[in-house]
Length: 346
Image 1 (cartoon, rainbow, N blue to C red):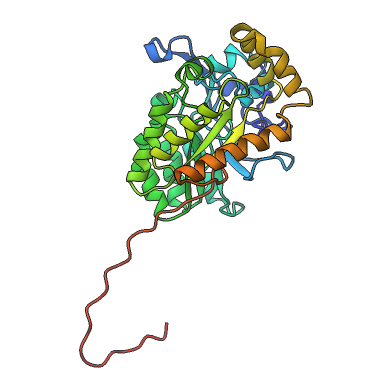
Image 2 (tube, one colour; image 1 turned 90 degrees about the vertical axis):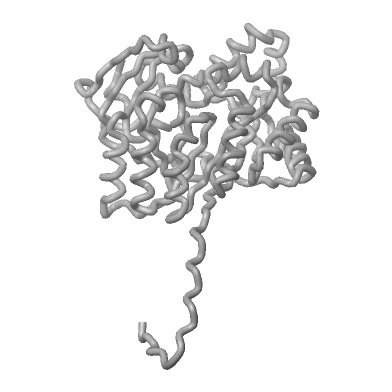
């Protein structure tokens, strides 16, 4: 295992300086049912705020990722490739070998306080889910959110995890002083499809309960309808059922994103496809013949269908991670004062 290859920019690409040394790694396993079969590699990172490479298609420049690898085990996860930087398997190893940056909250607080940090927006959950199962044990996100709140630093969170509700009060506090964007990922509501392609995630209806709960507490929550999976989750009736459920949850927006298959994820997904839906393999080879992304005509078709359904159900499109902010109530008006008033110069 080449820990020295985990670098400050290796959430997206390789660089030279290591994030931590091999002697900083502690490997643990736990015999509780929820963690059986999972190995945790606890490390003390040297950097936690990562710059997104300019060549990326992302709409944000900075990320924080307290974990690497993800027990959600989504067969299509684009972040699988990052495990190969450590000589870890991008298939089952990605699902069960989880790197935990145990000093993430204290490190983030220190980096936010640096004179070099300009207070830019920080996106979380963009590589692997920061509310995956491990967060229930390591509890890194409360410290991370508190650090961002205390610096009034804008941030967004994208998740499939219901554990985010544990931190609702902290998020609400942060939203009173800075821009906060919350998005939940729900690509489909088909139960059979969910069980096979996202086996470690909460059910779609439970994720939509997260959206509903945030809305009830005055925090707008968007839904990233991702991924829309060709030939398995893209029938008109499936799209309609998903958008209808999203609208019923009180989501402020719905943004569709068609499945993309980057190296690392592509091989794992195609193996899964050949095992569960072998008749679709030739169709996928044709659809993704030109690279990681489905053809533009297909993406436009899905986007148009979802947007039309969203308009029908009264919700609109937006970009994932768009910050939203709840404002504190206006102070009560002071009662009128009789007599002369001293005007302030300031």
